[in-house]
Image 1 (spheres, rainbow, N blue to C red):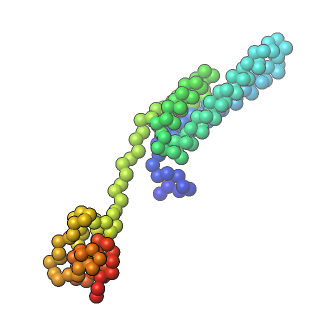
Image 2 (cartoon, rainbow, N blue to C red; image 1 turned 30 degrees about the horizontal axis):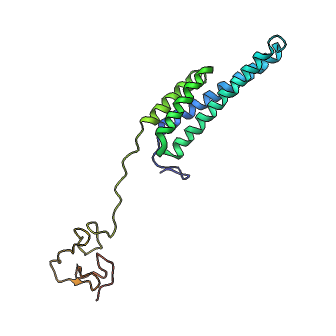
Image 3 (cartoon, rainbow, N blue to C red; image 1 turned 180 degrees about the vertical axis):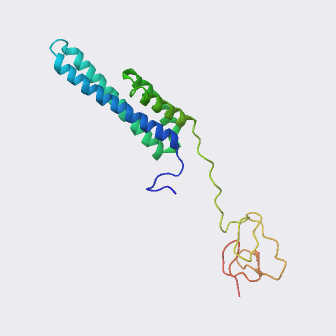
Length: 185
């Protein structure tokens, strides 16, 4: 049983791989930004423009990691849009390779998760019981009807006929199998 309002069917493997990949991409971007800031502080007077460019680059990759994380959560919350979400995860996983792709393993995991989201198909819906619908299960002791608008054949024993719709019901029935009206005693 699934808890906390999460949908029962979503691409679990794609979600987990994209989530882990996004975390690796984020970690790589944070470490890169920290290293660039440290190196920029030490050598800022020699190449002042290079440090700024590398920090901007690290921030962009950080955004890619955040986007991959957001999209992985979207896989779980909106499984009907898994194909488009998977395509976006693939795009941002490939873009993350510009900076090492989350130590490369993060980009690979996010890429595989995106591919799995694209090819995922929801499991078939289980048939819901048509309680009280014609042709389905009726009340105990009452025959099921063949189709809408067609009266049931009379039961083999003496039965009750509904005054509202004319449907023949079982002898012990208290309500009509077709319209639900109360039958005479």
